[in-house]
Length: 124
Image (tube, rainbow, N blue to C red; front, side, top):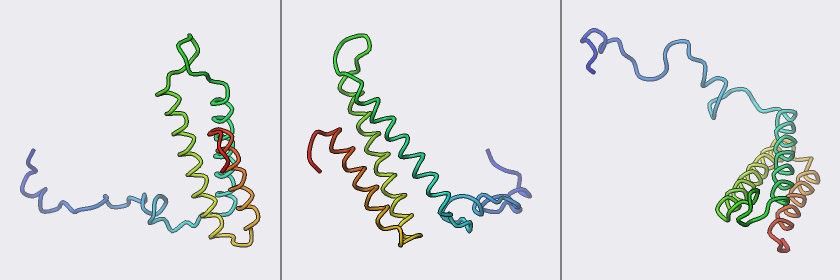
């Protein structure tokens, strides 16, 4: 659909006037993340990983009514890996903001590796 000639001349690239998305979201945000915000996200993500780990521990692969197939199990493990990776990135970001909390970061990494080791059945 072609715009009328006068509308073409007034059209500008980018967001409409007054749009503030870049001020509150994304990489252009000028609002710094706070320690509390990161700590809250880390705690929430850790809780989700624990819940998913508990669910993975209860499922069985097979052909029964409540069993899941191999593809579904692989998706669960993939999701677990994605969540763990996201947790690692948040912990890294937190470490850059609060370098004095190195022992907490190391403990969280060790906990995540222990959980992954249990799920995969290998020593990490």
